[in-house]
Image 1 (tube, helix red, strand yellow):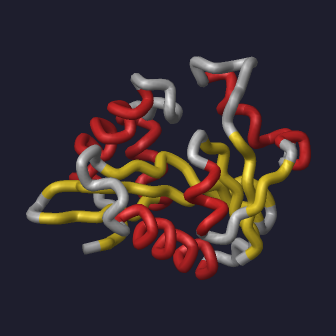
Image 2 (cartoon, helix red, strand yellow):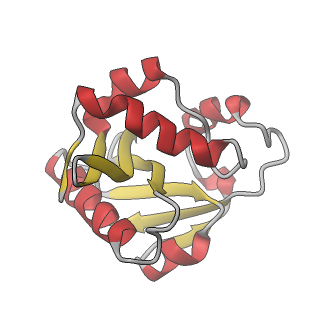
Image 3 (cartoon, one colour):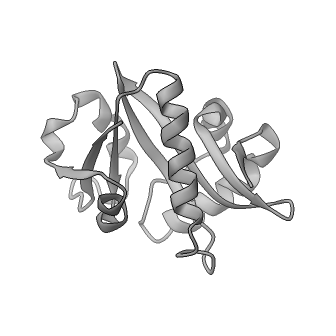
Length: 149
């Protein structure tokens, strides 16, 4: 089931995200950052456990960022990610976001969902504030994609 994340989900969300962060696939998240942004997140829950998560973080005017998008290993390619992303897109619409972007090492997934690749320098400068926390900074190999919603 997909639902808005709750405070009680934070430890499982953190473990899921940071399992990918240790591989350099995404930025790590602290408990503090998750507690303060919990309203940005949707989760896929099954049998009382978090199987996937995805956040939409407002960044600028009508622009939001897809963040911390992860599905438990062994459960990928089963439609969970698509369902999570679709739910987040609908949630973004409710607060007036008209565009979403993502920085990702999996551009093909997002292209299949309607995102198109852009140059990183086309995104507002504010977005790069998190980049200094990335293990790949300043040699980022993530693709930048955007979607009109």
